[in-house]
Length: 127
Image (cartoon, rainbow, N blue to C red; front, top):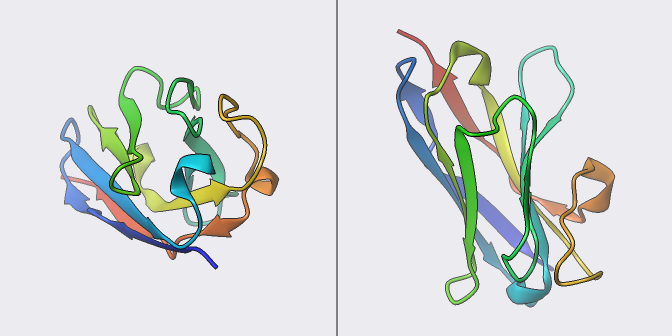
């Protein structure tokens, strides 16, 4: 059974940057599709970014395009999310997730396509 642990959240000022990391143990990381979601208070969970198992394809939610960058290191079993130009509306709990099976070039965008989740890390954007 896979175990996912996020880190790197915290309080950041508008316009600032933060980098989230997700460490995954168990299973074969290089075969997992991986992604980031977020959930703000009173809102549904939202797709932020996804990356294929090979790392050759990426997809972003419309609200974070050109500001966030997803990456993965298949040698270290880690997933990262670089978040730049942060806005107050980016405030949420951020979750990493993995999906098993499928093409090594496929990017999962729907929450139902993921099989395991981390516990989440809070990111608060406020002055």
